[in-house]
Length: 504
Image (cartoon, rainbow, N blue to C red; front, side, top):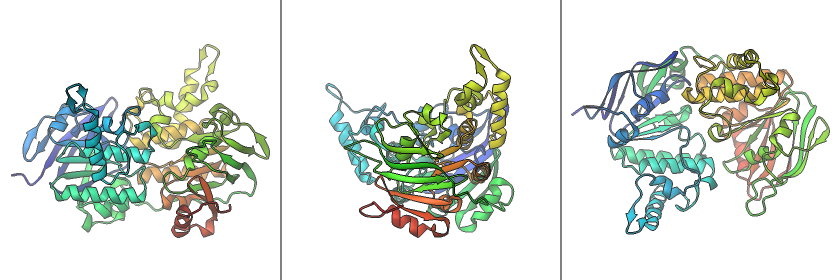
């Protein structure tokens, strides 16, 4: 009997112009929670896609319980007891939770699909994992955090022996993270091997037994979590010591560039934005904090013209403006990097060049003439500025890592030369090295007079990068903290406040 539940040996994978995996080894024990770490582009997701039958490696071998297996498609991975929760959600939005969980394996009765049985079985699974949702709810009606929990339940429902989780906590609240960790420990106790990918170091030390690090598509090393620390792991990931992580060395002016008063989303039954007022100053990074569902993203969607029928007033540089669409917002110098790059941002079958330049077509298209040289110049400028790893500008963006996709998204909006940049979870799913680069870019932008609104669920990010922080609870602002008063305790007090309605 093999010591390992899973062994991947000498895995090699290439795309045109780039080697994403070079002789990578990985071992997983039964009942083990094994972290897989590395910067964006290190090869983590590529290795998992090889294991899941999505990619076909040029060479290498996979063994399960000591026996060599051939994994050529997703079905053969599932047949070998492998289930994967990918970083980008893959649920069908116009189907119910139950239909998504049982997609492709629906229980059949005398008259076709047995909906009652399917919904009952799905509800039992949700209840077992303490997910407080009804199985007949449409996926489209769920928040990203709720969708993430459904993905987890679906993956576990296959009775897998090997479970892969790629950034499973990127969009869920602290209470849901605790529930997830409890589920993971229960599964490990039953002999399931879990591969856990996360950029949140604290989670690695909370829940994992061992950790393997990849860098630039190559294996760096494996350590027992109890015998390593954050500094060593960061050094293994980036190949150097990180002298500085958060960068905020600029003091904004007192000039108000954006003033929003009494913003409400206009929804009567399920209002998510209730009488929100705030100010943004020139060169400021203004943090918006709060628990999942507090209304932060919905507030910014109103201001950016994405919510029809919102009420309230918006003034830019002292002048009232009417913003009824994203085009209106852009004309007034606003740009917004959305939270969900898959659904709201990127064109996944298009190139890096297409995705980088789509918002500034007027800069290189005149009537019927397309200035391709100018388009490439714009794209290259922001690929360089964001330090995006791509073999060519023509690379299909779906082939990039999650962090590099995020860099393309940010670069696209910087190309519009905004005065006000809204960033919704700007470093979600991004590694420590890329985070530091994004923070440096944000800092430099404020020195150039750009004002930034940053929505973030990561308290260290909010506390270290924000000049001021507005905290929201159930659609209302409960308080505003100046830099010297920002702390985890003060933020959490306002984020959990009963009977919200505090003053700014």
